[in-house]
Length: 78
Image (cartoon, rainbow, N blue to C red; front, top):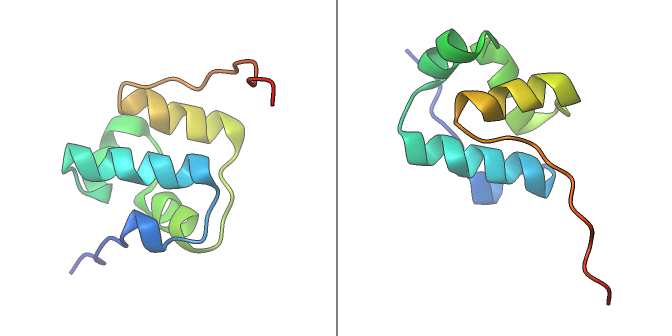
């Protein structure tokens, strides 16, 4: 039986990772489907929810699977 997904708002992770999990929720795919499409193990996705910080290249690959890309933009002056 698959482990249920956590609510992204309840995760103690960086805002970028939380946003990634919001995007995952929108797709409605389970971890197995995302793993098959991305080449990233479902266990990796689960670890990101609880205690692991994604490596930049892996995180970018996961975003690409969802149709997004990681970019850098200049911060607005305060």
